[in-house]
Length: 372
Image 1 (cartoon, helix red, strand yellow):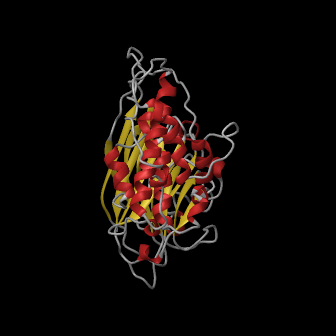
Image 2 (image 1 turned 45 degrees about the horizontal axis):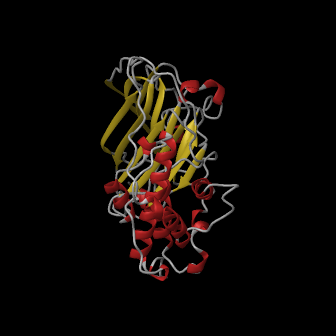
Image 3 (image 1 turned 60 degrees about the vertical axis):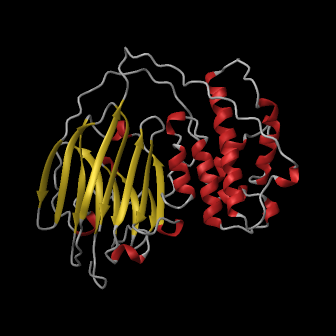
């Protein structure tokens, strides 16, 4: 990209099929809108994730990633650094969960998998209420008086469909009780200020307890497990080394920490006895991984390898919904055909690369792309 003169951006979008390139949709309209439809949500059926590099009068900043719902004016957004316009490669992951109705976006820059170079956002949107049954999935980009080169190095799209009605849905298997642990003394358990390894080990222990208790509650088992449960009080008591406690009769630990996460104040859950003597990016990852492992839907919890990868800064932070999800029972539906075709449309002012898909029965869809 030309660092001194650039514009206007790139967008991943879903719109009615077949996709149509609007007239006069160059520049900040990104090939998706024009002057008559850009800010008129009643005339549009479109959801997009934009990487905007030029500030128009409706934009919050000159460089940002945002989620657009029936309008060029982003519903939610995150400002991006100038590195976006320097030609640095970026990876974008987009996930939509049809159960929670949350659309989540994670953008990170290659070689910088840390908090300062990863950006996540999410919003509540019911795609079935906005889009028709047949939709186009693809990319659109535009330039105006200023130009830039948009490069998509690779991308993939996945959709998970709902179960057939004749399938039997069973509860997850009962998780084994945690092993019996013997401590030589309470003073040896906890987090020493400045000890990152101690924080990681203890939070993994707390997360394991969260997952175990959540799983036992979900399957409503009445079977007594032999061994280990005598130490449950000890395990739960040790969580005070990581998070502060409140009146448990009013709020659960997971709900409280998740509420702080949604208000972007998750660090407030750190033990006040640490006096802030810790690395904030490390503590944030610990808290988020703990919530991830305690997700109400056991299918959304990460494998241990993936959780460790996040703790080691090898994998970007997951984009969790701002509020703790509530599981909703839905009637199983028949699988519908998933049609995928590729087409492209280009013009002097904007370009579109798209594919067609059936959207009504997808329970979870995700797309990831690498751009430069």
